[in-house]
Length: 457
Image 1: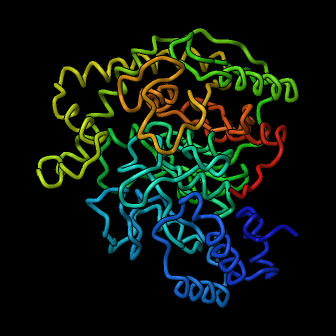
Image 2: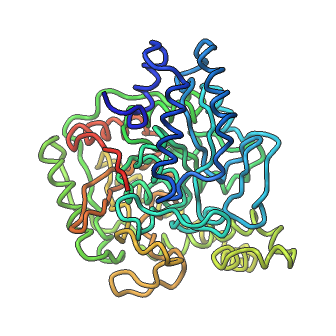
């Protein structure tokens, strides 16, 4: 039998419910696995006291199951407040912050029976797709410890890939569920905006651009977790469309620079699976200029970040503790005019209109999940992609913007490994609200490529 730490959440749930294993055994196996591999990757942070966790596992053993996650250990992304657990957002401003109440996501996981063991690492305030910060340090890629695991859900992805967690939550504003999933060979799903509830009082524009979502090593676990995160709103669809029409957007007509071998590897993976599954893949010309999307996105993103972090920016002692990425976003956002924001919204409407035409023809669209292979963990961000200099800290992530700007559902699909053994992935993109159909296509993909494995760094 496989080690308990290597099992998916659904299998653990079944075994706990049937009393084939106990929550005590699962917790002990999880903590042993964390002891064995977390020192290398630094994915799980703010780990709770071992005796307290074993006590909660003993309590779960004595109780009737509360939900499908009953007795299963989870670690929650460090952008989410968890009662009684150090929750830092990767920022020195909150290095010792211990919330007195749970955010909604934490409440939903606990209501399903999960035991929170700690947090998963992130970039400071989730800005950028490299999970490093001055509080907890850098999360490393389990396939090559000299490389990044991505972000902002990098800790979650690395913990899944190494078997420290069986499922994980994440969030995605600018690829944060897609980039790390690609680089750690797991699945990540950015739901249609609105499917997973935000926090009460959350600003409307933020919730239009960013969303919480699930990560897992299997689609079955991912869908079950999505049901929990969405408070039961998500319902699976079965079966997937037959002979679906898939639009391949590639590198957006050359607008998105790609590191050597990455685009070819993604297209080869797509064509190989498409032949097996009977998918009809067609190359699609860029539906709108890439710069239109980028201009709209960077304006709206800076505006939102300035609203969120502006209060810290206005206090000199706190501003000095913000990293360069945060300071750049806030300064840019505070300088925006109403006219600039309205223009960005009009550009977004142009993109939404183009999508209506695309999805009248195609069941789904596909883009690479990243423009690079995992880069050295010591970098703050890449200064160039395929010889093209980056003019911002996040320009190397531009390929994720079409989904984020429109609030579309997107499933990060594992797509194999490059010449050096590093993973890469693809974004399977559907119309807003078609999450179930998109995940049904994902299940077919999973059947074609086989299960994901846990790796030991």
